[in-house]
Image (spheres, rainbow, N blue to C red):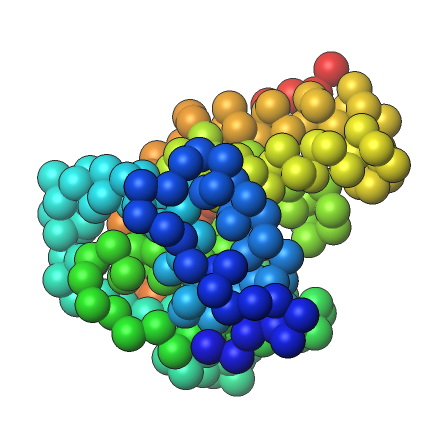
Length: 235
């Protein structure tokens, strides 16, 4: 691990039988460090241990109950940078998942998720799979990459998967909204949009067992209709 020189690496270790306060404190520290270093396996695994180990274990049980979920856990397909050919995807017709995915990275001047995480078990795989679907979820849900769009997506994930790290990000984002209106929208609209995103995630089928890799040539609208409940009307 290449630790931030201002951070004592010993403070990034989760003690045995850690209290909720310790878990939250360490999670907040890790969320600051992981920004811009999302593929760091130590940060990711420690975050999972702090907040989401039981959540991922429960999700694995759900996946094992369905044929597609069992196949996913067995085959472990990857959407990591090294397993994507963005040039080939970019050559697909406009409006298809593959073409829009490639354009998403180009327009936002970012690169696909990459990590050195060694997959030792299903939990490692599912946490990796969740992280590498983040950018695809922006496309299929329609939530933007601006401040409020990112928080909407985290609220959606919280509703769909119950990821506690997503809950913490929503809470932090909401605190910043109350403090300085970071999202650029009034509080009432912000609250409605975040609540609607959470409810939409709850109403949508689980997305973790979906093989995006088999749908590059499908229209984004078709994939979205399959995976996402409709947007709620905002009054």
